[in-house]
Amino acid sequence: MRRFTFLTQALALLVSASVVPVWAQAAWPQKPIRIVVPFAPGGNTDSIARIIAERFTQSLGQAVVVDNKVGAGGAIAAEFVAKAPADGYTLMMAAMPVMAVLPVISKTNFDPLRDFVPVSNVGSNPFVLGVHKSVPAQTVPEFVAYMRKNPGKFNYASGGSGSVSHLSAALFVKRADLDMTHISYKGGAPAVTDLLAGNVQMYFGNFSELYPHLGGGNIRIIGVSSDKRATQLPQVATIAESGFTGFKTVTWNGLMAPSGTPAGVVARLAEAVKEALASEGTHIKFQHMGVDPIGSTPKEFADTLRADIAIWSEAAKAANLKME
Image (cartoon, rainbow, N blue to C red; front, side, top):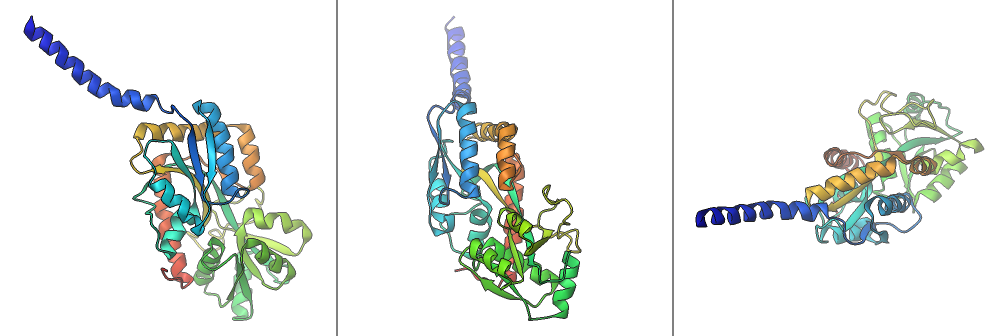
């Protein structure tokens, strides 16, 4: 009888030891969740975070708030989240430039692969190749041929040295073997203004920056940097289709958590992203921003991050940018 009692107690201890961690994960979340955004309110990253936060509040049953931590090109927010408790209550709406470009061109206090666990790639934005109407080219091959016939005569704009628009353009110019001068601006808006005025002949910008100006007739969009054509511009070929196989530069926003966050919590968050993106209202909001919804698995997102770090390392070399 004593032996039976001992075995029963031992079995109970083993069962409780295996059940408690599962119960703890299943009980998540038990308090409000914070999504940290590395940029000021109003941009694509912030808007996406707020859309997801609203949906999460409904599906997870806890308040989900957005916290904008601005500075150092996004590094302040990334470092804050990397050092946060890995309990699923502090997340980051990461932006591709912060996670795949900034660590390539600057010394940061966070490692995008070591310090974070990818949850889900929420949505992506293609870049588009815009040219001024004075350039006699309707396609990327025509543009390349015209630039090669006029080496050193034309300029391309960017939203700043080391920006994604700069690196995308520099990578394209290098692969196309073009002789063009880079003109750096303090942001995308002034770069677009000078493209519209004809002061520069080319700008690689976000879809949302250039698309609204097509009706004015001063610019043309002749290429898309994603691997698929933009649904809003199905007649415009991708740059990969236009003779530059493998060319792909897109920006994305994805949910990340501190390294060590329980796998069960990560899986539940990834599922919550899919649920949010399945909403017709979310699709409409994303379409207005020129964002393609994704909702990837954690593994798929991790693969995307690794691939992009390699791409932007090459682009930084093409732009002659050195680690600062």
